[in-house]
Length: 195
Image 1 (spheres, rainbow, N blue to C red):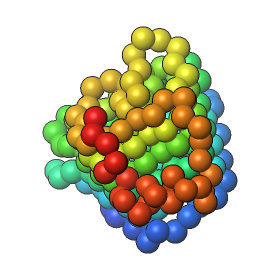
Image 2 (image 1 turned 90 degrees about the horizontal axis):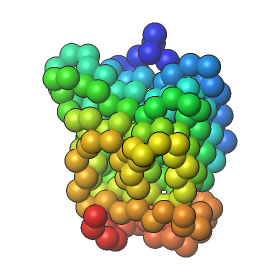
Image 3 (image 1 turned 90 degrees about the vertical axis):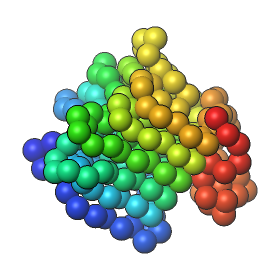
């Protein structure tokens, strides 16, 4: 789904897994399972295993771009992206979960989520690229960042509020049945260490 077709509403994944998602949006912005989500919106309880997302910018495994709609807030919660590969090309705002958030009148909440994998681009972060008005709580990133400018962060590439989150850069990646991934699922991501 791209910005011409924003997702609006609630998507409950009920803990289901999506394997080998491939999103090649290389000539366009806003790549991810949901290219764009309009506020208010909720995406929760979903696992992506081996997702690949390519876009010119605003790329994330779950959401490329979150933007204002009606009043309220947007949520991404209880989601995991395992062995992720996100490539932002020469564009900006690339994150493991969400590429960019730019709401002018609302807030975005990303809670109890985790990412392992490789993320490449400008304004790159393990969890979020441009995290304007985004609040990350109890989240985790383990993997590698390949950034092409000075705006990058282990959790957020630019801006954002981070509470009780953890990053392990250049970590060995973990498969679905790996002990650490299972441990993360049992604990509810991010409760291991504080940031």
